[in-house]
Image (cartoon, rainbow, N blue to C red; front, side, top):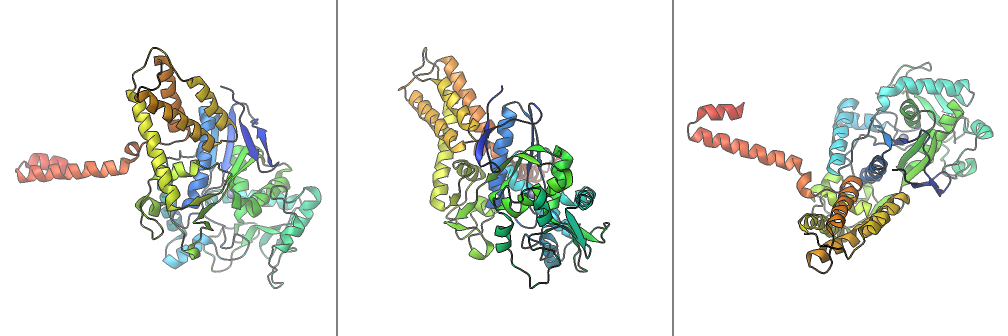
Length: 467
Ligand code: ZN
């Protein structure tokens, strides 16, 4: 199946036909979480957005290598070159090893992504596992003359870089714009210019996560990990790089600069960015009191939430908006999504019970081609969902005897729903998504059986169950 898939490219600001570097292969890199806190809505959106891209390319018979990293070092508090390492700070406050923090929140992240039915990535590299690759890249950038070392730190020389490569091509922010937005740190900065950014940073005595390097003990700059790991697993130039819109500047702009400065080539052909999430119209933030973790959504345990919302409700709600639009989370909208997803799921159950007629009053092939067109048009899930609800209407009309489907059309409609709802949108019935609850129920049952065996003095059975 060779489909024309159009992708909106943040770099060129237009939709383009997707042309892979290697035929039938897709290399996709997505910036993953910095693992120092519980996963929240801000993790769900890129998780689900790029899960759809991954699933759709897979469905279209591409071989996809989907790389999503875990940031476990180098991400400083204010997303710039100053401040404490986010993970080290958490470790210091909780008196744990930084790697305990990393392990704990990586597992929580996986659990939340699994609940949302996001497929695992092909490779999940960690920044701390690729220090050598990052050091090699810094060495090459220095050798190429686009960086300078000062007091054990290495900075990318943005003014010098800009003489050879245009700086700011992704974000549209040139050096003057960037200078305006940069706070001059009382002349204390050792950088030649405030626009320069660290690609290697000297570790202060209290900085815990540190490695030896040709410039002394330190740690890589935050942007460096993605450049080094994407190159290692996908090559110097690869197909798709994704992430949240908030990463365009400085993170992705810096990645472009690092790759050009190191390899003299642009790293990515298609830049894709999902838009942001607001809660009651406001940006989500710990200080705003509207910061809600995914677990709080699933349990309903937060003062802003009227009830709990299942992972599939959250997934459906996110997919009801195009990934490039903003989404506002509110109870009313979520309850609407809850109704929508249950309508879709019960229609799929009804579909299994429908008896075919001799002829059809509905054109299933036309519906199918509309569904594909929606996905080919920059992964337009809200349009796809609208078409699927046309199908839901037909299913219910056939059930009520107002419309009819031939047996071949009925089979086609079943395939269509399985393909688009289950495989591509990744929406599954709650009954299939409670493996943990089910395990707990089975364990309760087993324990009850053991109690019964004990009370009827059947100790052989009781011992067997205990084992
Ligand atoms: Zn990144």
